[in-house]
Amino acid sequence: MRNGMLAAILGAAILSGAWPACAQGVKPAPGDSSAASTANVGLNVLKGNWVRPDGGYTIAIKSIGSDGQLEAMYFNPNPLPFSRAQAVQEGTALRVALELRAGGYGGSTYELTYDPASDRLKGSYYQAVAKQRYEIYFVRK
Figure 1 (cartoon, helix red, strand yellow):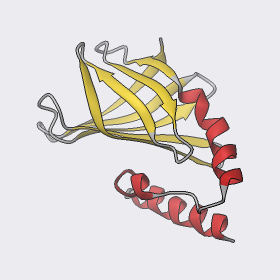
Figure 2 (cartoon, one colour; figure 1 turned 45 degrees about the vertical axis):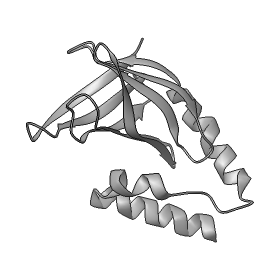
Figure 3 (cartoon, one colour; figure 1 turned 90 degrees about the vertical axis):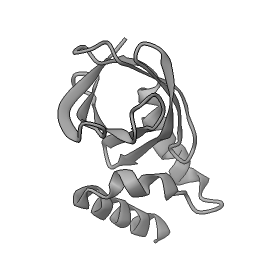
Figure 4 (tube, helix red, strand yellow; figure 1 turned 135 degrees about the vertical axis):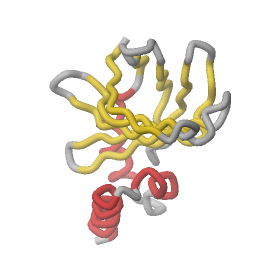
């Protein structure tokens, strides 16, 4: 029952656009390792280096915690840490929310969805300083 409620809350948050802000706080119930393990197997496809062809920006995803927390770094071309890096699996959809605060990015975000047919991360980039949103994608390096 708890997993059903979590799925409903995540689904509503994603549909309302609030998911990137709330995703970091979502944690599996204590002792509910089966749901976390099942989700983590799917999320593992995100591991690796991803490059944005329109500028060479790179996301390196080293590991994924059972709660979807990503150990990831951004390269433009120098390394910058993400202030927030989270993945969630909803059904067959894998979504990634990333936020940059270092290096003059001032809260810029990536909201990405994994496309298994093309092996790409697709979505939008919000450049917080310029207050502009761009449709972008990353390919596996």
